[in-house]
Length: 334
Image (cartoon, rainbow, N blue to C red):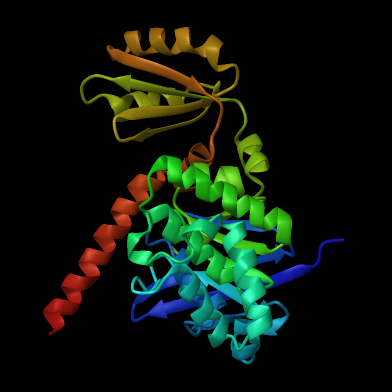
């Protein structure tokens, strides 16, 4: 039976009037890849910072590897590794020297240090680049080295904060494979924050949707998509009739949900392929011109839309607007 390695209870973090994390609760099982999925500014990184003792919570509790994040900070730190969102390698050292320095900080004796560095370099496939200055590494190589560095002291839990941000799609996919490999080989528990839908779907055993500091849904990717069910029809219409047409759609008994996102209307229905002709005829009766129609099974993005009413990209925009407004308020106070 899998044991719980992280237990979070009503955890909150407030910065002035901004509630970055708002009373979230969840458990993570030992050996699991658990994802916090949501737009930038949703509270994912703040949650990670609290669980790794980098920020004190305003309210609530959490235990990581059996230790209280407020009372047993040193014990928590000994049992975790962290790959930060921003690069944190020393470009003037080689890959091997970066690992060596990190191992010394964790007081790993020389014999074990040499062995662990060799193991980690092999795991992240950087054996032949170990003695090259990090400044000459590609973005993907640097990310792999950071993941390896986070494993050097054999942590029970590895926190990955947006591990593939800024990488090209091919390199991102390679990093996903490394993450899966280290989970399978070492049985390391992984906590992953991301705003990439496909990343969470591919990697995570369970996913928590985070929006405005709250967890709005939590389950396996499959269960989340199955709960939405049916098919999603995306239609593009000309002119400014989208909102009016959505009202018409919502009045149809066979339409589960309908909402506007950027220039598309997303409609959740059963047997989508049979409903497309009805949709086109319905649009014609209301003098709405359909430009294009697409049909797909529900994705995690569709699930996020279902729970929040917006796409992750739209939520990112609103989060940036909120942050900009907060900065302006602080500037006026000065």
